[in-house]
Structures are given as C-alpha cells and as structure tokens.
Image (cartoon, rainbow, N blue to C red; front, side):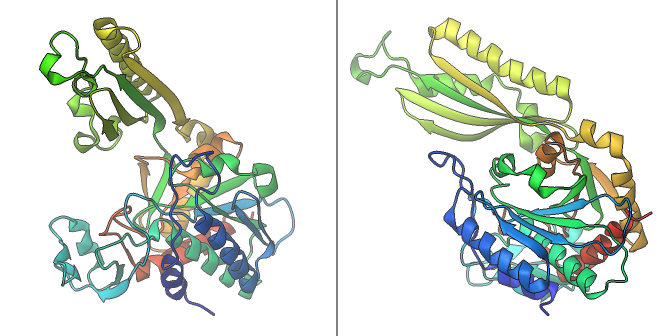
Length: 408
C-alpha cells in the first residue's frame, strides 16, 4: 500500500498544466490532463474504488460503497488535477526537509531561499517535515494534496468496513485553475446530495464564502501615424489604456486589499500605438459592491469613448462565478460537521472567506452545496509552495471523521 506521501510525490512529478484561452475552449485544456485522468482511474481501481469512469471531459468518477443502510445522504469529495500555467509544473523536484526553524534553502546553486521573515507562519511547523520545491517550479499541492488525501481516506474505509459511512462519490476535476472545467461536470452522474472540495490551505481551513467574480477585457483602438507628422492625428492606444487604468482606484488593487475587500486586477496588458488590450479580473464578496465595480468599468469606457470617439474602448464584461454562501447557508450542518471533524482531531477550525473561487462555488449553483476544506498546503501558485507531511496525514484523519458525521 502506498503512503499518502509516496502518492503525493509520485503524482506531483506528472505535469498537468491547464491553459486559458485555448482555441475552441476544449475541456480538458491540455492532453496531459486527460492522460493523468486515465492514470488516476487506474489508481482508483487498484485501491478498490468502484464504478470508476473517465468521461469525455476528463472528469474521473468513482464510488466508495456505504457500510450502513438507511437514509444516509450521498456525499461527494472532489479535488482538481490541474496546476496553473503561470509558473512551471514540469520536472518538479521535491525534497523533504525536517524543519527546525529559520530559513529553508530550496536551491543553493541558484540562491533561492524560503525566508521565515517572508512567511512567518513557518514557525508553526518547527519539528515537522516539509515537502518543498527546488525553487524553480511550483509543487502541485494545489491540488494533488487533495487527491492523495481522498485516496488515503478510500483505502482506510475499504480496509475497515466497521467504519460507518454512507455512499461516497469521488470526483477528480480538470481545468479548475482556469475556472472553466467544472462547467462540464455532470452533476446528475455525480449523484450526490452534498459535497466538499478538498482544495484549501493550512489544516483547519473551512470556507463557504468566495468572491463574486467577473472578467473584463478592455480593447483600446488607437490610430498610428509617423511620429514626425502626428500632431493632432495620432491616437495612441497605449496612452489611453494608461488613462483607463488610472481611473480605477489604486486602493482596490489586490496588493492593497485583504479579507473581505474586493479588487480590480490588471492581469495582462499588451499592445502598441494602434491597439492595446488589457485583461482584468473583478472580485468582491459583497454582491452590491461587485456590481459597483463592474459599473465603474462601464462608466470609464463610456467617458473615454465620448472623449476620444465612439469605438475607442471596446469593453467586454463577463460574469465568472458567484458567492456560494447563499446556497450553502440553508445547509449549515455541512459547516458544523466539518468544524466538529477538525476539533475531534485536535485541530482548531478556522472559517474564512476564500479570496478566489473553487469548483465548489460553481457546483453549489449547479445544485450541489459544496463548501471547501483545507489540504495543508501553503504558498500555492509559486516556487515557495510547500506542504507538511503531518498535514497530509492529519487531513486524512479529518476526512475519516467527517464522512461518519452523516450517519445518524
């Protein structure tokens, strides 16, 4: 039997990058994810998980049969297979460091150090074993930590039929990092009444609120002409783009926000005199404030079109996902069960709002109330990503406790 650490190290070495804006918007967005999905299906079968299936979109489904009869709800446990494209997820070279405090040298040759002053919460893990990167890639704990924790849960439940639990559906999802994969999830096939995504941070994390989210593409159309004869003729789209951005409040940039504060984030900008494109993401937990942020984009676009001529600004706003809180709140026992499961295992539950989104947010609006639980990982989406071995193991214990809560 593979340990949770063995599985984790094995799985993170397999690249599963997802890519936004692929022509035709295929799901999954990369062939490597589909390859991994079939590998995951084989792993699930080897564990003993039943009804294993990979669908045409790369979703992997499986069943852990119930050990009790009666009216026990079917619960889904979900984790995503992909990693972000912003930093390499290829050729990951993990190592395990027994942490005694202070800084951690990730790559002596390149001088890459994970500094305690930058990440003071590292002090919480003195005496534990940290799985870290070599400083040149991400680690992949987001979300292969969630996958291996679900698999370890399955092994425990299948090995010990005396543990009381209802039917559990396992679902591994593609393209979570680009926010599109879950739209292709067959919730009817999943066949669960409630779910949890295992896709969070430090052990104890519990989230049932997330941002309302939208994207904004701002296309600025200018008019180029030789600069030697451009007076009163050139319309420099770069300048107008900077003017547009300058009208957005700097205090609403991500670097200046935290907690429940929303933001408008310029994520990508490219162009020249003739044409400039800016890609934004807009986020806020509060629905009314979210609408105000979107309206601000429309107001700026209208103003600049009036100033420079209609068609100068082509604004394309699109909603992405909504705050799951209003869907989950009628089922607060899901939150209570999770809190109790952490506490029963000596972990203080920490309820917070996600400054982002999860598959669970969209699933909640697709008919599956689905809060999010921690995995134990830290510093996701970067070269300083790490996960303590003890956190992986602790989350397995928490999940074993959690699935029993649904048996009355």
